[in-house]
Image (cartoon, rainbow, N blue to C red; front, side, top):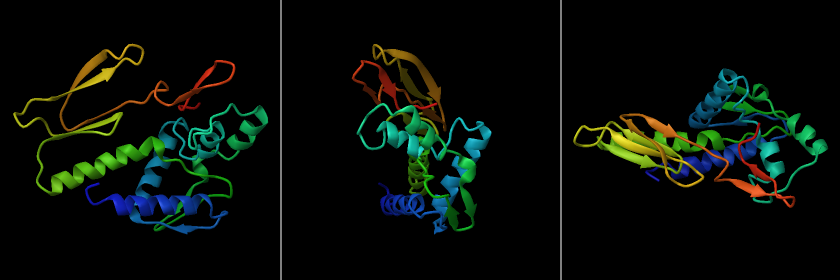
Length: 195
């Protein structure tokens, strides 16, 4: 965990407190504030396609609990009424969400973790590395011989390489519904990437 495990656990506790604060402001660490600000910025830049307040909907489908089910239209409408990253209020050292609104940093968490790991490796003098956090691959500079790292992107249907990317000092990030999904009683397949 490269020294960040305790800080990450504390951040998870703070986010849980924020989600359940009933509309009250919660004191947050600078790291938590930074990822929340980044999430809100990505929400704005993507026109809401990435919305870190989607937790009530993800939970309803069971993607956060493992209790998978197809929610009713009424349940979805109620959960969707709570989704809007613009409801997140941030001030230096504090955050507030309206009651019922909850954050889900699943789309950003691995990226933040790999950024922290790369920073820690650099701090301790590592000049070349390739980290793989399952769907999040980060190259620190290039290989020791100066050549680019080669990262394969897999086709989910047959597990063959779709392409191989050559990267230096860059991230390759993928996500697919073929990894986190469930099959409903009627045979329909539902994945964790929600629109």
